[in-house]
Length: 253
Length: 264
Picture (cartoon, rainbow over the protein chains, first blue to last red):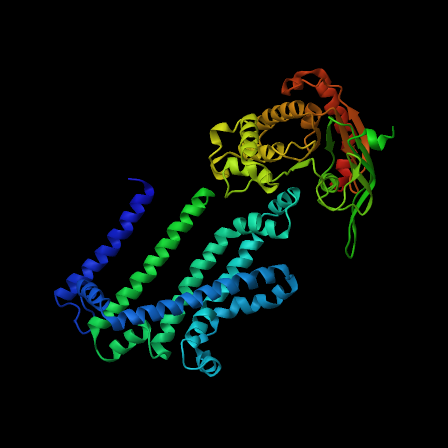
């Protein structure tokens, strides 16, 4: 078995082993069912819930909110990163703000966002956006910083204009960092939106989990939690696999 | 016929000053005539402006004063058609295969696909990379990556090839062999070559003529004609004349090198 194969095997063994232990602990009564239900029941609950229209509506609502927050954060983060990279003085001014950004609990701005956008999905999109945009901005700055100057000189040797230099040299060279930014932005947008729904929204998966928790509907709560967990892991695994293929070509995988 | 039209490239009174609170006088004033098809090397102490000289000759940076003429046309603001540059650092594109790296410049000028394939195949084969055409730079050694960069320049069929310490990061044996490759390339293409190097033996082995630069601001303090035949290769290091040329280069350079490290 290859080294990579062994790592995957070990990862699955640990995950399944822990799930098996929890299953046994629940079935044998070491863990009360009121606290945690067995993983097999979580799976069954998730499958059942995903066949109901109400949950599917919530899935669509949450995922479209995440998608909008993520997409706008990636575009704005990239554009702002590129602008700040080209303006060193502005960058020096905003660097301390970026460094301390994640120490600010952005949820405190929810009332302001409701006042600005009204009681609809926009405040949640804004929360997801605010959570995700610095990750993309910082990754863009890092990526552009790390483009070897000699590649820009090669572009000049080939007499490429500004646009072609950016498209054919700068962006491909910065791609590994940009990809990291995309991955982090997705994670932060997901966290921001689900957490926002959990405490602030009248709909979506986060809201449904909170509602089930308050109504002692453990099966629903764990089924939805498992779905959120699996969705996040799946998307992350897909992006990671894409990223490692990209880095392997460049000898960094 | 004047010198300016007979020579392939002509530099007159070229000066480069980096402005600032305390301006850095990096280069010149400096004059140089490069004959068509000549292999000319530049040696000099660290920081004497060798790479600056290459940059202004290539059109990658503008001189503060003076003029540069290539094939009768002034070099202003951009790399002239017919000039190729190979840099000291690995400048291969890690996201492209060897084949795509080499084809990069040809695709940019919109050349016909069949002609690109023909030229790339020739350049890749010429540089001994045929078995690695589908590989990515990360899968190659440092010497092979530098050959990719040379092939990427060669494929454009430049008439003036500027090389900025292209073998600086390679071990001595690989450098000798790469030197042979470079001589072969120079003979077959008939291009004029300007090589920047800090290695006196490399300059002595490869060149028709070697320019020795002073410490900053760099000027030519000696011009050494090697007198080698055009079909030379790395075996000339065993020739007694090789030792004599290297010794002359060092005697011209020693005082300047001492100045560069603050002992002059």
